[in-house]
Each structure stands twice: as C-alpha cells, then as structure tokens.
Length: 328
Image (cartoon, rainbow, N blue to C red):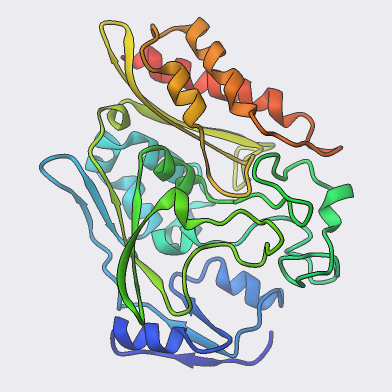
C-alpha cells in the first residue's frame, strides 16, 4: 500500500475543501476503497474520512417519497420495512448485493460510486487498462470479457458498472444530492455516470471535492409493484451477468406506467426507455413482455466472450416483468 495522510475534517464543508485537493479521495464505509488501496489500484496522497459527517437517516415521507442520507448503510436500508413496502426493488437489489458483512459497512453513497470489477482494472499487473493508465489500451477487448459490458461501450473501454442498487434507483427515477466547494446541486442518478468515450478514467460528472449527501426517490405507483432480478454464476457474493429492475403500474389488466433498467450489461446503470414505451398502454402478459424485451438490446455491441448477453438480457427482462405482472 502506498503511503497517504488521513484527514479527519470537522464538518462537510471542510471535507469538500480537503477532498478537492490534488490526489485526494474520500473514504466512508471503506469496503471498496480499502481493496483498491491494498491492491495498489489507487494511491491517493490524501484520504478524507467521512465517518460521522454525513446524514445516515432513512425516511419514507407521507406522500411515499424516499430520502436516504448519503451515509445510510446498505443493510439498514434493506432491512427497513417502509422501504421494502414502498420500494421493494431497492430492498431486493441491496439484499442481492455483496455479503452481509459488506452491507453492514457500506454506505449508499459509496456503493453508487464504487469502481468497476473489470478484472483488468483490478489487476495492477496488467498494463493495458485505460481506466488506470489513460492511453494504455484495453486488454479486455480481446481478453476475458464474458462479464463485461455490451451497452455504452467504446473502443477504449468495455468495463461494466458493478452496482446493483444503482440499477434499481435508476429504474425508479432517483436523484442524488451533491455538495462540493461550489455549493449544492441535484443530479438525476442516470446522469451521474459518464459513458467511457475516449476518457474512461472519468466515470462520473462529479467535480473535485463533491460528495453525495443524499439520494431522493420520488413517489411512484410502479415502484410499489417492483422487483430486482439478478442472474449470476453463483448465488453468493457475485456480480451480475445480467440484472433487471422493473416496476409496473397495472390497472384493469393494462400497464399504465413502467420503470425499467438493467445491470451487468452497461458501462453505467442502463435505463430502458424504449422498453418502457413498448409496455405502456399494453395488456400485462407474456406477449407484451416479450415484444418489449426486444428493445432491450438496442445498440448492443458484443465481444467474443460476452455474446451470450443479448439473449440473456431479453430472458432476464421477460422473467422480471412476469414476476411483477403476476403480483398486480
């Protein structure tokens, strides 16, 4: 591990000032950061501790909106009965994430900003990784890419976004509240993440020193009738090959509104507006689900190892839609 100084700011304002310094990074629960440090993937000069500074409350408002403090623990959110009742897709995504020990430590803000699990990014012995070494190339293009992205890729990077709960939150229209040296701002979660383009080392739109203070989810009839389905190689502590976060508002057998996003397939959590449009106004049923799922692979680009993903995406989505449709 490279040497660094550990900064313990007195408040959030001081944290944003310290975090904006060159070669500074934040640490909250530390479940991802400690691995990155010990594996010498990252080597910041300054580590800014956020423990005790950020709000950790979990609140479902009377109008059934959800507010999560940036320091709310994954396990606490997943166990909250109001979250499970009003936003089941969020609780389910969290329970399918990592392990119980990790969920007990990890914060929601940290989870949304975790780094990719691309094996080439996580292996400091691999030189050709544009995320770690801009301009070095991408070993994943012709390497072990079975788990990697088919949507939002570029000639410079096909690394998959790893967060399960980010997929669920994108499906229900979540926003992140951000604070930095320049003040506060609100960003739609799906706009927080950047596509790799020719700068895959820049993964979000956050400015230096900015941090997530809260996640806010608007009320939604579709969110109450929602689920998260994760397809993976093993059932414990494994990242998704494909996943689907789906919410449907169904009345008299007809779909009135829909929220759909997929994980394990994109360089960021991938909202599916074409699928949503294909569902709305149609009768709930397998024919509708199969017709809509055809749009999930729009723009997909596969490599040798991940050619299974487009078909698996459609099957995952149809299964998730059938689960939710059967509850209505």
